[in-house]
Length: 339
Ligand code: NAD
Image (cartoon, rainbow, N blue to C red; front, top):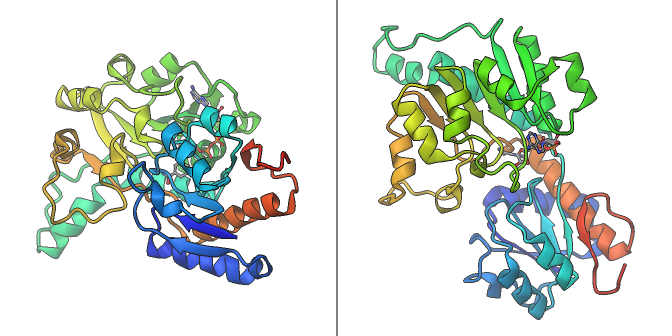
């Protein structure tokens, strides 16, 4: 079986090859790695494949899915949890098998969330540079004590819960907002409505999926409802935040600090080396001018444990399709044999 892997980085190749060699060698899965993202311009690279494997910024809209189907590609293996980039209706209509990796070390993303909060609050990124240049002044590095602060967790699923558990250890008070409240969160904090969470939280951290209902959940109105000077953290999906509104809130000091691992237009930037390019995204460039903004390039998932898990589950999903067995990670399961 031939699988074309899009948006493939060296580490994707390393972990997929390792998983294939160690656990799935008997299937003769053959991988072709393409470092470009999947789009209508690059979909031709999938010709001759039975399946494709994609990541968060690959474009799986109806025209791309239709082209894949014409090429005889019947399976789409998402090596990520989020599936906001897939037109599931089109995939279903075309009878494609679509499976994802719903959980791969939620703690990896939670720990990165905490790293962002601590870095932004205690300015360790600035302190590092200062000390290397022989500047030991503390002015500008003032933070606040996390202990006793209120943190609002929007989305109390796997990553939200893992983040809440760590913050509980810091002695934070936790508020949660989720239309499907997880019972475990009640042992850590209180569920409240979104307005109350925004009004009371010193830090708001986003852990809900990107869907129509959550697109720009952080917007001009909800930013105005936040506690003045609070910190916003987004390690979930860029589209949850209206970046233009956030910039205005930062300029007016209503928003005290911003940490993001995801950005609405990230597909043009993240996972590429743009250090020699002129970046023409003025919104992103404006964000980078704020001293109280920290951005990482979608690396929340990036641990050895998570990459190993992603690769193994991705291949297990494919194995289910090959063997015709039930796959719990499936989003759409109508392969051409009607299994
Ligand atoms: P999950 O499905 O376990 O939890 C998501 C939670 O959000 C659920 O409890 C759900 O009820 C809740 N939710 C749904 N609609 C909501 C709304 N309107 N308001 C508030 N909450 C709502 O997912 P997870 O594994 O915790 O992942 C969360 C998100 O993290 C994913 O959707 C993905 O976008 C993102 N993610 C980011 C990285 C990264 O590297 N930065 C890695 C993995 C996942």
